[in-house]
Each structure stands twice: as C-alpha cells, then as structure tokens.
Image (cartoon, rainbow, N blue to C red; front, side, top):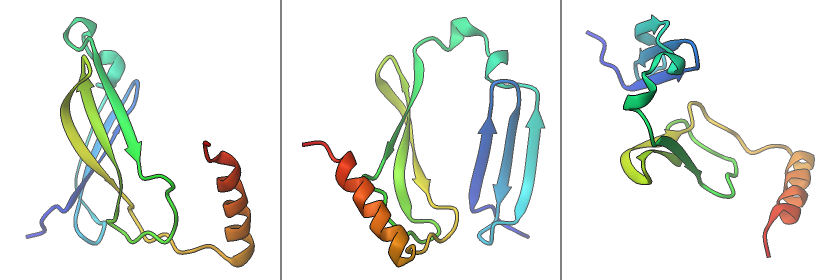
Length: 112
C-alpha cells in the first residue's frame, strides 16, 4: 500500500484539480472537477483572502521539502488556516555569473 506524503492543488477560476503524491513524487490519487472559484456562492465566502509570506531573500540552495514560506487563508483579517510552502525539488546554487547578477539585483531591490 502506498501512502500519500504531499497534496498538490490547482484551484483556478474555472477548474479544480488535486493530486495526492507519495514521497517520491508519484501520483497516488487524483481529483478533477469544474468547480473552480467562480462556481462558489459569493454570499458564503465574503471576506476570504490569501496571504503568501515568503522567506526574503529566497536564495539557493534549497533542498526538496525545505520550507520557503507560508500560505495563510484569512477571513476578515483573522487567520483560518496556515500551510507551509515548500520547494518541490532541489534548487542548486547558480553559476558564478548568475550569482553575481542576482547579487546586483538584490542590492538595488533592498529598501533603506
């Protein structure tokens, strides 16, 4: 028996898709429907929003499964749920020129 280790969800405006994945990233189960966000009754979900907080600056290397941030589901500015945002695969350190370019971009993006 294979056990699910992760869930991946794609909930768009017109479609909903969800997958259960094992530790190796293989699909264990899948669900698809036409119940996208536009299908929700508006009067039941007023005030709901999402807040994505990412680690800043987000710099490689990242290991698969490493926490990179948190997704908060809010209703009227009160947290309903929090979910970790993790790297789905290893992100290696870039080469010398790419790192130099990224360093320059980070320097100019920093706030005083």
